[in-house]
Amino acid sequence: MNTVDRHAESISVRQSTERFRLLAGLNELHLRYRALGEGAVANYIPELAKANPDWFGICAVTTDGQIYEVGDFDRRFTIQSISKPFVYGLALEDHGREAVMQRVGVEPTGDAFNSIIKLDAVNRPHNPCVNAGAIATTSLVHGSDPTARLNRVLDMFQRYVGHTVDVDMSVFMSERTTGHRNRAIAHLMLNFGMIGSNVEQILDLYFQQCSILANCRDLAMMGATLANGGVNPVTGQRAVDSQYIRDILTIMYTCGMYDYAGQWAYSVGLPAKSGVAGGIVAVLPGRLGIAVYSPPLDSRGNSVRGIRVCEDLSRHFGMHLFDTFLPDLPEENAPPRSMPQARQLEPGTEPWRESRTAPVDALRSNGQVALRN
Ligand code: GLN
Picture 1 (cartoon, rainbow, N blue to C red):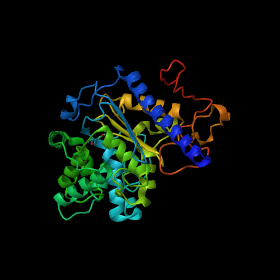
Picture 2 (picture 1 turned 90 degrees about the vertical axis):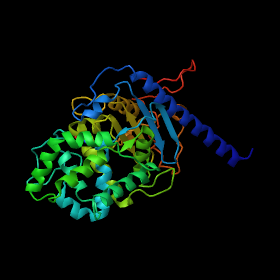
Picture 3 (picture 1 turned 45 degrees about the vertical axis):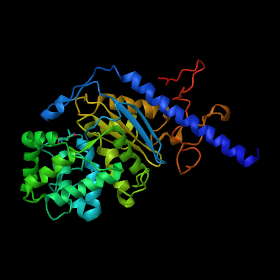
Picture 4 (picture 1 turned 180 degrees about the vertical axis):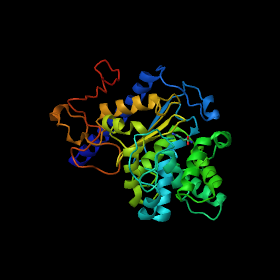
């Protein structure tokens, strides 16, 4: 075997090890948190209360289109607030940064997602992830009539997930009938001239985007598409203009987890978005999208298992965006440096690198695979 072949072989062995380690990690986390009894399924939208608290899926999709999935990865659920940053991307494409900024800001609020009171000094919602900002964002989607606007939103999600998407009519009708708080928020914004007078049409589109169905794999694919500069890594189709990726990811990083956003940025360190049906999507730019689905929520409306899984994944695999500064391990202990992906990052930026402070014990001597605490 010549040197080039040997090199290629050692890269592919390393890549298989990395793949195995990631899948083993997801399996381990699924086992670890399967029996967790914390949190409560959302019931303020009556249809959501029907979810089984045991449903639990995890999926990761890399920017070269590798898919890793565990548990109920195939079960569909409504994306709810996860739709918000994606529709924000569509509004940016339709109007550009300056015009969108007139209608919705980029400041985290520290308030609950459905906070009704807070608009900023110029009566603008603080950011696109609180409901006020999301409704204002939805009102910006171009289209000649409600059907055209809905189709543009559905087409966009279709590009992200790589297949046609459906709206769950029961969840949509359920929220439309009971969404008085969102209706009040919308009317408050109409009062301040932040949205047009077609309030019911705007709310319908907002409830419809929240009722789009996806499974964990779809969600991870949406994350991977953002991680991949806006191009779906499996279909190769562009979902969003690359210039707006940074806007979407910034919003997710600072506001994606509501009034848990600061703690999330501290402990997980990845742009992410959660929804009250129990989904969370997180993005490691250039590398992968991660999705967790588990309906029981904490008091802020974030999936309890979703938070635990992402915290552990980030800690054990050194995924925090600022883990780049972890000290190097001695070469003989260092894990493989390549990940299955098209682009090679600079040495020292591999998120899969073990650190002294957070070692990954992927392959135990007894052949068992486990993550260390
Ligand atoms: N449709 C939900 C609402 O507006 C979305 C909220 C969420 O997922 N946090 O209340």
